[in-house]
Image 1: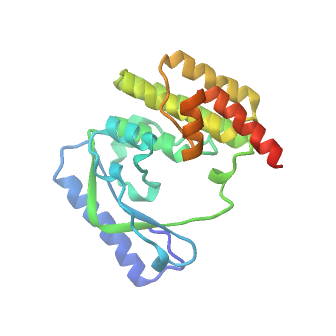
Image 2: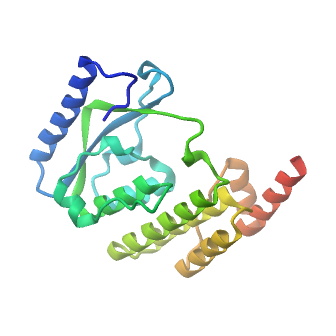
Length: 236
């Protein structure tokens, strides 16, 4: 549902319209489809929100949706989706043992259990952005362990459907991004992420900032990570 400050009749009508439009769109598709819609961030008021279309919004194939999303082509917040109960039962319930990226892990399973995604226009979901959210915490051991478990789940789920070089490179990119975000903390989790990359047997795409990508391209991922760590220590 749209996250707006304080309910009123207009907002209620918007929520109903969103669901009604998605139900109408799903009624025109074969059973097993799910529906999504546009979304936009705001901090204090929805009037601040700017809708920026993302590539994945209009991708229908579930596998392509996941892979392109992990390649940085966009995402979808939970409130945007409308899914039949049967798909949730098929995919499995929300994993309450996870604390970070648990929504992505759940939706990956639901998407892959579906026949496809339909994007519904003329409606939007608003997302209140908080600066102190767990998703921005790269120091918490709990967050790191959850993120790594999610990336392992992505790997397990995707390879059931598509074991291609591209899929393996995208999955390896998830683990590279994990190392980039959490290094040098949580040494055991970092070690596991490196092991997963090695077992995938492919070279991951470049990750990180533009500068880091350049260094990574010139000297390789491991050395680039080490140099970045030295730089951080010198600056602090």
